[in-house]
Amino acid sequence: MTTGQLARLLGVSPTTLRSWDRRYGLGPAVRANGRHRRWAPEDVAMVREMCRLTATGVSPAEAARVAQRQALRAHPADTPGGGTPPAVHEDAAQPVARNEQAGSGLPLGRVRLECRGLARAAVRMDGLEVQQRLREAVAAHGPAVAWEEMMAPALRAVGRKWQSSGERYVEVEHLLSWHISATLRHRYVESAAHGERRPPALPVVLSCPAGEYHTLPFEALAAVLADGGLTVLMLGCSVPADALMSTVQRVAPAGVALWSQTRPTADLRMARRVAAARWGVRGARSSSPVLLCGPGWRSPTDGGTGLLQAESLGDAVRVLTELQRRCAPGAPVP
Image (cartoon, rainbow, N blue to C red; front, side, top):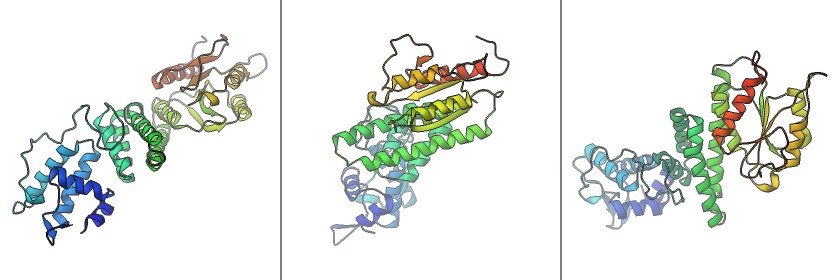
């Protein structure tokens, strides 16, 4: 197999394979005419293991040592790469928290090794690996930790790279966003369908104002709330003010959360209008508090009733859980 064929098979660039060969001796044992790389099945298995390990967050140097060791065990008569593999400790492949190069070209900073593995898989455009990493993170840590410590840092890093590189990384951002959304929505559906339900209560409504298309933070919030047994009504992106008002009057929610990523979409007048909307039978009408979420909102300064603000995912979960608890049947009147 040629280097180009192997690169297409594994979803990496030929430059990456040549770099691994040059840096770590992770190359083919045989070269045609003494120059051109030709990858035998055992070479392919070794590089495939290298890809798998780096996708889990193991550094390239550690992954190369482990891949070479396993190849030598499988084929003791041959030494991959034409040299003797260096000694490798048994724990070399174990993820260790450290501030090392991400190996993905993304400015990740100090993050979980699981986040680094997710970023590497995204840059390789390995959708199956991205989805597997996301499923494992949500299953192991829950949607809140997975969002705050894996998904969001990877998305921010892709965004920074995209801004500094023109449109070179837009395909990575789209791939990663789509799989994150699919994972969070699946978790919401599973939790809503199979989780332990509390007594029937008024729902909490999650919505983005008109012109706001960033829904991933609220998809994470919906998954976390559903995990906690709350009833959630997700309206999604760019909801017109009249449509949101109609929803509030029809479903009488325990609270309404609004997400704005940027200042232009943070319509404070609309938020006050929703908070002032009255619903219920004559003589016992009530209203729904509005929770402002996201960096686009300025703190309300008019002292208007019904406007709350969340600084984090945890704040939003705490406030909305308490609002729905107060509206549950038999709950004491505050």
